[in-house]
Image (cartoon, rainbow, N blue to C red; front, top):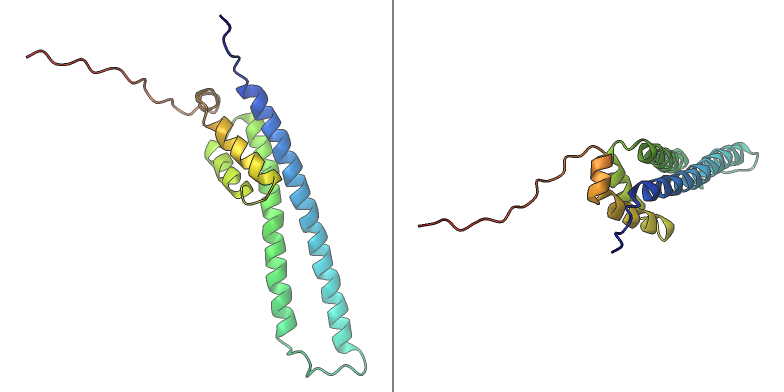
Length: 150
């Protein structure tokens, strides 16, 4: 009789590679967006100072507000990308299981690759072998209750 092999260690290694790739992609595109925001800020500020530009067309408070909101969003995306890279390191070290579950939930919103990565993270991290690798206490085995003799 053949017994199924436990592939949890191998699956955790593959998941860590997936988190490195996803984190690198998110971080790279976030830095590109941050450069774009900076470039557009310089262009728009120079347009407002150009001769013949009428400042009445755009309210003076609108451009700094838009720039601030977009910059905050892009910085949050950089933070998410760096957290994904850290999740890949945590998977390699078999630490921070709860953090990895939170990152898996966040990844599920990133369709399609992040959704697949998040679902497989939930599947692998909820295996008893993975819980043991991460040092989580396993639930006690359920023992059948014997009827009491009267």
